[in-house]
Image (cartoon, rainbow over all chains, first blue to last red; front, side, top):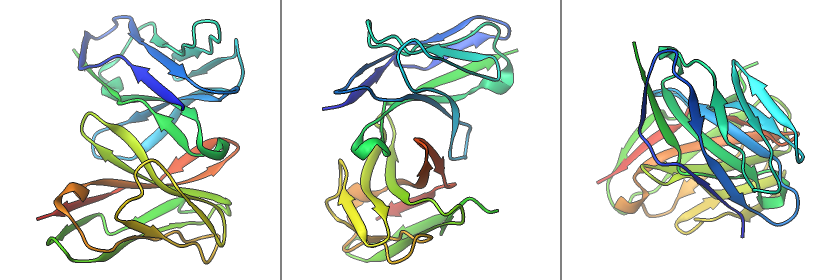
Length: 112
Length: 110
């Protein structure tokens, strides 16, 4: 079945540091891939997505590239800010192509 | 445009009680789903619906019922609450593979 594995946190970085959160997946067919972000006390918000191999999703300085050959969708940002502190979830389209399979989430804390 | 709304925001139940978590969306999305979020587990799919009158089970359906009589509403029923159902519950609607999440219901079962 479909599954998502992402690096465990918490990840603690200083402001302006480079961020990588690893995500790999197992899936049949050609799923769409997503990164969601959850700020404290809130629901999940879509951060970026990619719907086919070699697509690059980007938003708010975050990027991730759909790598079919390595079944990966790693999240990167060149310079993190304190406001980026949140939990990040990698996900893929699973059930009937709509509901998602989520990774366990990676908590990011950015310190001034 | 309210998006996806959930009520209540918080709820405490005793073991064996029943209750319904409400979810509504005003975006006319056909697809809706319920997830639970537990520490270290990510989000797990409970039930989903591809349209009014059609529902199906997700990864962790036991102990929960759903129905979809209208496009807008997708309530989740706990028939006999158990401590293992203590969790944060998120409802979502979907369009073009993007999921729109509600703010969540934090449920505690004593």
